[in-house]
Image 1 (cartoon, rainbow over the protein chains, first blue to last red):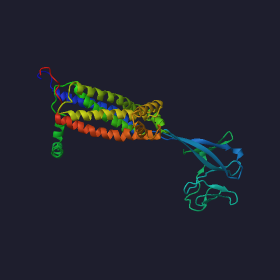
Image 2: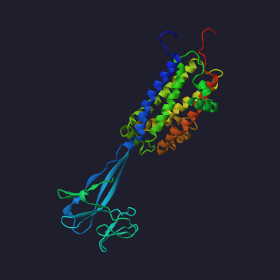
Image 3: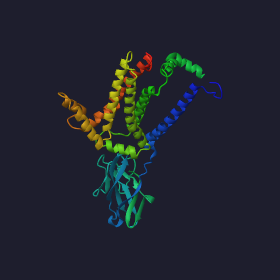
Image 4: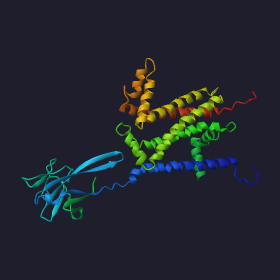
Length: 164
Length: 219
C-alpha cells in the first residue's frame, strides 16, 4: 500500500497478535506465579506469651508440670499440639522453667521424686533438677526459659513461647 | 550467530515447514466463524493451565474438598482469579465448541474428505461435556452433590444395564468418597489425555485437508 503507511498489513497483524498475546499472558501468568509461591510469602510468626498459672500455686523447691496447647492453621488444616514445661521455684523470687522435651529425640521427660531426677521414658536419659545431663544419650541439658523469656504479671507466671 | 543456530535447528526439526504448515497455511477468504476451532484450542490450553494451578491446593476428599476450595478463594493470592478463569472458562468452552460444531454443520464442512475430522470433533464435544460433568462435582457443595446425584441417576435409567452404569459412575450404589475420587481422576487424567490425543488427530487432519471453502451460490 502506497502512501503514509510504512507497515504492511501482515506485519501489523503479527505485531498486534504478539502484543495482545503478551498482555494476556502477563495478566494470567503473573497472578499464577503469585498463586504458586503464596505460602512462602506468608511468614509463619507464631510466638506468644503463654500463662502457666499463678506463681503462688507453684510449690518452692518442687518441679511442677504445667501444660498448655497451641493451635496452628496451615491452609485449610488446623492442628492442635500440647506442650509441657516444668516450673521450679528455686526460691520466693527465683523461678526456673524447663521444657519437658528430652533433648535426645523429643520424648516427654517425667520428674522422679525418689531419685530427684528427670527421667526420659524412651531411652532412660537422666537430667538433674536444673536440667543438666546426668546420664544417657542426650547431647545437651533440657531447654530452659530464662531472662526475658519469663515474666510475672499480676501474679501469673508467663513464658515467651516461640513454637507452634 | 542466531541465524546459524536457527539454520542448525531448522535442518533437524523442520521448523520452517512446521510454521508454514500450521500458521502460514492457505486459508479460504477470511471469516471470523473460521476462528472458533482455534478459540476452542486456546480455551483447552487455558483450562489445562488453570486446572494444573488449582490442583496445587485442591484436595479430592469429602473431608477437605470444600475447605480446600474455600482456602483457594479466600486464602491464596489470586486464588479467586485462577478459579474464576477455570469456572467461567469451562462454560465458555462448552459454548464455543458447540458454536464451532454448528458452523461446520451449516457450511457443510463435514463432507468428503473431512468426515473423520467431524467424527473426531463429535468425540471432542462429548469429552468437553464430560469435563464439565466431572468438574461440576469437585467443589463438593450442595449444588455439586445433588447435580451429580441427578446426573448419575439419569445415566442409571438406561434399560437393562442402567444399574451397572450407575454403580460404575458412582463407584458404588451411593454418591461417596469413591465418586469424588473417580470423578477427580477422570477430570484431571483420563478426559484430558483423551482430549489431547483427539485434538492432535483433529489438527493433523485440518492441516492435511486444509479448510473447506464456504459453499457458493453459483454452482
